[in-house]
Amino acid sequence: MKNKLLALKLLKQKIHDPSLTFPLISEKTGYSKRQLIRLSHSLDESSDMEALCHHANEGKEPVNKALKSEIQFLIDLKKPYPSITIAQFRDIFFEDVLNDPAKSDIVARYHLRPRSLSWFRSLFIQQGWKSPESRKPLRRDGRAPHPLREPAPQRGMLIQIDGTPFDWIGNNEMWTLHLAVDDATTEPLAGCFMPTERQLGYCYVMYDILTKYGIPMSLYSDKHTIFRSSKEGNLTQFGQMMADLGIEMIFANSPQAKGRIERYNGTVQRRLPNDIIRFGIHDYDTLNRWFTAFYLPYIRSKFAFLPKDPHDAFVPLDGYDIDSIFTLRYERRIKNDSFSINGIYYSLIDENGEIMHIINDTPVSIRVNVFTNQMYALRYRKKYPVTVTRDRRKRPSSIADNQKDLHEILNNFSAKK
Image: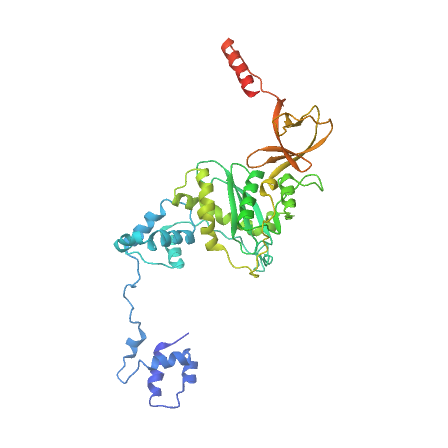
């Protein structure tokens, strides 16, 4: 325990008593030599020891104390965000108010000042606001329950992909965010919102990655049937697309095994709903465009870090026909000049627009573009358009209470032919 009054008395005696050395005074008072030298500069023969023991600001209001106008402004700023982390609320205050030149009059009027994270933490406690930020308890030995492995050294070496269902807009509709995060930098590379987790969402994500960055070395995912076939050794449709690009699929056995993207999903779930409110996003079409154009770079600037190896592992897309990559693949055999998929019969069309005559049992490869649903057949590496010849799908039962209803049903049949 430091004794300031004793230190001042001994320093004053030292002026006339050379036997009182700084090490001796330090041992008796708890002050370091440097602190004692600084204290000695404030001494003279007429020094009042009691007065020197008190700090000059004692009893005064702190010069940086927030005024009531500033506190009230922050209370009003918080109202649209009932569940927000302390860090994000501070970000919004800095980005939307303090650093906005158009808000300079507001900053002056309410006496707003840049505040530290600890200051905002105290404000949350004073106002009784709860932050959704939560940390999992450590183990008894003080380590995290699932220690993290070292990240991949190069950007593009390992991409983690996952789907997260959530009510992002707050309209009681659960939509799934399909997200891809680079393992080396934790930067989000691409994202897509869809009503459910589906193959098309991951195709959009991969299309963005391929066209913006190139071909990654591998993808790390869970064992969803989109990625991993239930039949050992078989590739899913998505797996075949990745195989065409030379991308290796790696599967995790548990959510903890792909911890980086799981934690990133948690970060996005906490931040994104508030930023959707903040930027006035009201529908998922707008959200998808805004998320890709603005939010990915915005969130990347906050949480991404440099990889250990500055050289990218992404490979340029040169030489690949990307439209041919993102296709569903079916193998069929011709019967009576046609083949069927999902109860619909198709025939190949030649360059004159005529149905082609093909020998029965001839194998053909069918491709369907995942984005446009455009279908074509491959024969001898040549693409042939196809046309619908019959629709044998099961039709739902219809009820006709009168002749008018029957007439409408028949008209619908004619329209579908």
